[in-house]
Length: 132
Ligand SMILES: Nc1nc2c([nH]c(=O)n2[C@H]2C[C@H](O)[C@@H](COP(=O)(O)OP(=O)(O)OP(=O)(O)O)O2)c(=O)[nH]1
Image 1 (cartoon, rainbow, N blue to C red):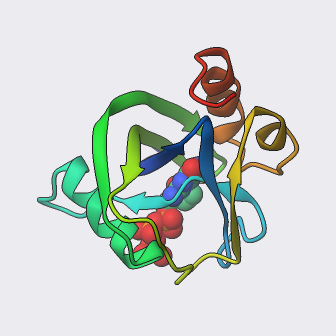
Image 2: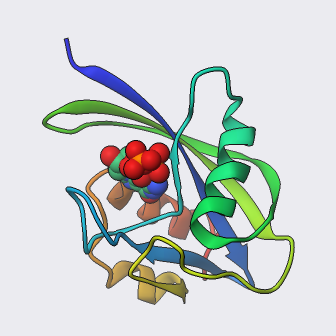
């Protein structure tokens, strides 16, 4: 049976845009995703999210709530990714792990090369008006 990876990601929203990040390493290097990562044993999803955003962006976030849980079968594992609506708690961040990042509106989101599991998520975000 395929392993399930429990992952959290932050939809960091600001004025109708969301912070999209480009992976710098690993199997999906060069693809776009939302910042986040795997939940560690004993950690709550929210604590994992706060930790990952500090590790990746050197920033603190406010979590406004769970938006959607994405389930996706990759070739080697099953992904269960909880995606949260969040905001930056302070105005600045640094890219400690990603190759690049941009504040994407609905048009820009559609033009990025997303990791497979995020393609449907991005469409849903546009339909729900999270990005404009
Ligand atoms: N962070 C993030 N991961 C995603 C997204 N979409 C998606 O399929 N994934 C997948 C890619 C990875 O296989 C997995 C997340 O693992 P990761 O390698 O980023 O996690 P991590 O930061 O804990 O990594 P590491 O310490 O093991 O290097 O989820 C997304 O939008 N954001």
